[in-house]
Amino acid sequence: MTAVLAGAPAASAPVGAIPRRARTLRWSWLLRLASVAAALGLWQALTVADVRWWLRFDTLPTVDEVFTTLVRRLGTEAYWLDLAQSLIRILTGFGLAATVGVATGILLGRSRVAADVVGPLTELIRPIPAIALVPVAILLFPASEQGIVFITFLAAFFPILVSTRHAVRALPTLWEDSVRTLGGGRWDVLSQVVIPGILPGVFGGLSVGMGVSWICVISAEMISGRLGIGYRTWQAYTVLAYPDVFVGIITIGVLGFATSAAVETVGRRLTRWLPRSAENGR
Image (cartoon, rainbow, N blue to C red; front, top):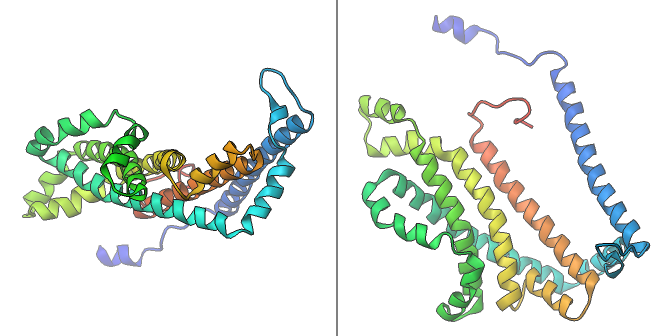
């Protein structure tokens, strides 16, 4: 029977399925690009016409002004230094939060003692916005750089912790019982059941944590930073350089999109064993 199964031809996609999927994907990207182009066109039209209804578009820079400023800023060393500084901060804080958050979430989900000792502390701190702790970070750390990383860490830590803990508690006990019945120990349960089983939930928390991290790192840079995109954007606002403000906003959006997409891409690759519909597989 094994030989028959081994010699059976591999299942192949229906004829025409791949071209149809390619056409669907191409159409999806065209729609996305069209939506961005329409938004830019509307922005240009409202600002050029100095429209002033309930919203004051006459005070905003035009798309042409922002694009010209962006091209000019791309040729300066300060722009790339700010970009690198913000990326270092976000990746350091997020990396620490991912490591500590996943480990703590597994511990809280698997240990009743840890849930009783550490759980109340995390639930008391979790509702506090990370950006509200900027004064604490300034007092606690000798350098503003460490404080910004700390704020970024806190911002990502709790979404990752909560999603991991819920994922651990949602695992069917049948899986663990099966491994133990076959003679597996605690490490076998952790490596073969817990970690693979919680990956979808963990990456959901990582995706949310990355977005919140960007919000907090930019806010912290505006308050206490010396370099970074947030700091430079706020400085541009104080001197009324509004095109530079929008360059900073666009840069933050692009970086946030790229880092979140990277997290989701890694998550999809590590959870390829999950069943997916054609819609979710795109």
